[in-house]
Structures are given as structure tokens and as C-alpha cells.
Picture 1: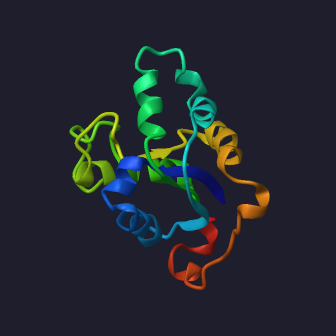
Picture 2: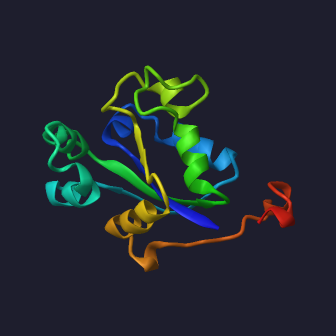
Length: 153
């Protein structure tokens, strides 16, 4: 099973979309194995977005991500990194396809509701920024056998 970090950003929290977004992941058969409401500090933002810190637009991103609470979660499932990113849709909500999270709820490039790790290395780097190993609770849902065949694991 693969794991990814998902952040329901301050705009998602403020717009009261957290439950609707999390429900989409659960409805897809993915497991939420860690979750917390937290606030990102400027230092934490610089760790999370280390590759962007020197960009001219970074100060606006930092102001946005530190501007309110967010929900951090670890989502687990088969090919979860690809699946979650496809569920999110294009970064700019105006470009995102209907049926995706950003396509249905987003209308901005920066205020795009959700962050998800873009690959296995990013997920491995980002998860420990928000969670200790003791915070993670992997499990097998009782309906697992109705979600996908054993040979698909």
C-alpha cells in the first residue's frame, strides 16, 4: 500500500469543504490513516515548499498557507499518489475538469483547496513534516474485499 500526504488548505477549511473532500477519498476506497487540524508556521511552510522558497511568488504562498488552520492527513491505498492527484484535477480550478475536486469547488490558481504530494519521494519527505510514526494508524477496512480483488494488491 502506498501513502501520500494531503493538506486541506485554509481555503478548504474556511469554505467548510473538509467533509466533502474527505468523503471523496473514502468513497474511492482510500484509507485515511492519520489526520489533524493544525496551523502552518512560516518555518513549516519553508520546509514544505523548500523547492519554491526562492520564487518571486513564494511570499504570497506562505501568507496564504499560514493564514488559517488546515487539515493534514495521510491517505493510503493502491497507487494513492496518482489517484489522489487525478481526483484533485488541474492546479488552477478554472482549468480543472468537472468531477475533480478543484473542478467542482475551485476557481483559483493559489487558492486551490488541497495539496497532495506529487510523487513517492515527495510523500516520504512531506509526511514526517506533519506526522510522527505514532500518529499513523494503518488498517484494513472490513469492506476491503468489495473494493478490489486480491490479485490487484
